[in-house]
Length: 246
Image (cartoon, one colour):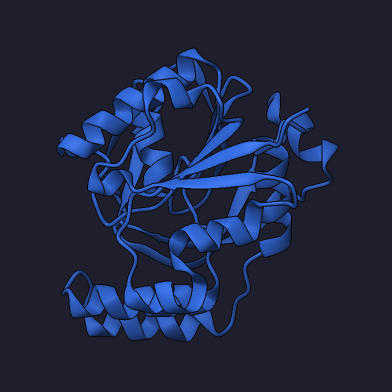
């Protein structure tokens, strides 16, 4: 058997800080998901860099990252990404969408996205995983608790999924924290790949760009000191899904 191949569809421009400390967001995902003997590539789709048609079939799975862009916008690169995701769906390729990636994946399947009804969600939040659907077997098979804490940083959300997709987690802030479509597509609204250090850096960037107010930023930073994300269970869940163990 040949080596496993995966691709990260990078939807955000790396900050100098993340580049220097983590090797960019591609480095963050590789650190969490990659194993020895695998090949990982990156396509900077936010800059118009996409895999060629003949390359798609050679990959075992794809990861769509977060972004400062809106999943409900019609920027050229976002429309191209949606077309690619529809192609991957038709080929039943494994696709894991994170934050913006979760939202744009839901949109590509026929769902609706937009500004979150409850505004920004920044910090560590506990989400509830489904225990009453077909997904309960998914979580129990790898011994994942049905309540997990995760880092969140978003102001948009999936408002509605198509009938063929299934909501598999929610929180008191967001109705669709996770979803699955078949056995090959899964979205996670939070950031299993983030460290608290990355989130603190992002809060500062959002403040500098006037996306959030200083009082909101300080409150988010203070709460972050009190809570820890369940990083290892999330890593296990993402790897198990992406590599065909679920």
